[in-house]
Image (cartoon, rainbow, N blue to C red; front, side):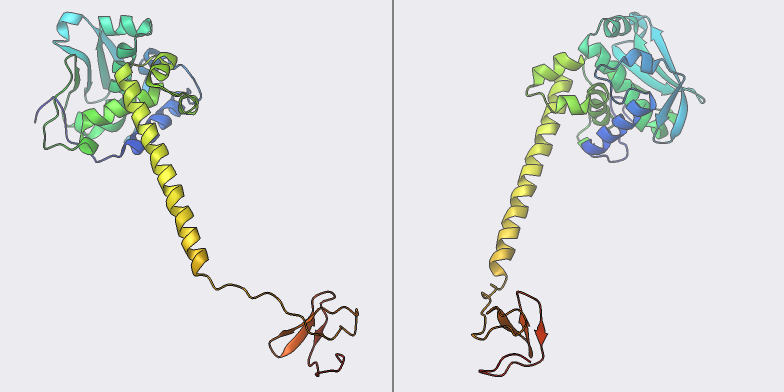
Length: 258
C-alpha cells in the first residue's frame, strides 16, 4: 500500500466538515474566529470517530522529516503528530500553510484511527501527496484531511458572510488553496439550495394548477329566519346561514327556513 494516500471509509465533504465542527467543540473552540491550532494539537486527548484517544504533538528537526511537512502515526497507545520545527515556527507566526498542515494532521487523527492502528503512517508531503487513480476522492484519506483542515480552522458562520477566497484566507489564517476548497464547497451548497428551492416552487405551481377550482359560494334568494340576512346556502341535504351559522334540515322553495 502506498504511503502517499490511503483508501478509507467513504465520506462526503459535508460529513467531514461536520466532524471538524465536532472536534472544534471538543477542544472548546466551537465559536472561535481564530483557532490556535498548535494549542489544540498539544492537548493530551483528541476526539476521534473511534472515541477519545491520547494525543501527543512532537516537533522534529527539519532534516529528519525527509520531505514531509507533517506525519501522523499510532504507537500502540497514543496518536502521535509530528511536524517539522519550521512548520511549528511558521504556524506560531500565523502562516496559513503551516497552520493548515497542523490541522491536516489533526484530521488524520480524527478520521483515520483504524488505518493508523493497523500501522499506517499518514504523511503530508511538502510536494503534495499523489493519490492513485483507483482511489476516489470521497474514499481518499488525503482528500478527507484536505477538507477537514479549513473546516477546522474556519468559523463557518463568519465565513458565510464573506464573498471571496482572499477574504477567507486572510480572516482565518489559512492557505489560499484551503480557502479555495472551502469557498467552492460553500458555493456548491448555495447552488444546490437555490436549485432545490426552484424545483419546490415549480412543483407547488404544478400541483396548484392541477387542483380543482373552488366554485364561488351562491346564496339563495330567501333570507335567514334567525338573522334576516340573505346568506343561506345549501350544504349537501341541509342548508346553512353563513352570517349566523344556523343550520336547517330543509328549506322549502318560497318559504322561510323552519
